Image (tube, rainbow, N blue to C red; front, side, top):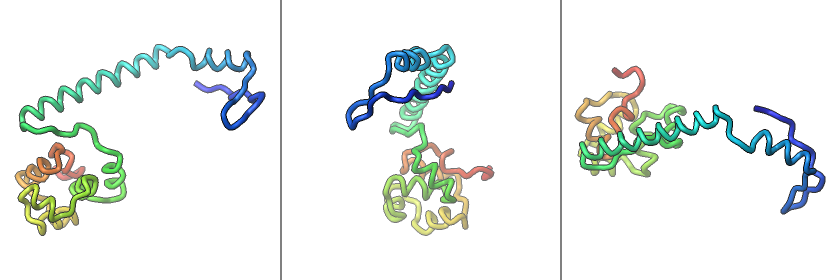
Length: 145
């Protein structure tokens, strides 16, 4: 969907004045959601409901809340090359020592995982995931299977 924006008649710091014809053309294009827009809105709502059900299931199983989305800060850090453990730890604002305290995983091992000298066992990653309140899958790098 594209159209040319109309040229305003008057522009001030507080207002933009358009002709009635220009306003009506904008309303025609943007006023009512299309069937495709409604499908997208319904799909997003369904995905959010599924995320909520998943989060509730995990929270019940673990007796603790778990994030079901990945914050943009974590995504950016991973794209910049950070290990997922470091990306999540930095997102939480934690030091390696604090993550050690929260998870019971040694600070040296955390450093080795973050610098990719060691992968970390399933048990270790599970403890880190619980401490970071994220699914273990979020801490495993692509290709680490």
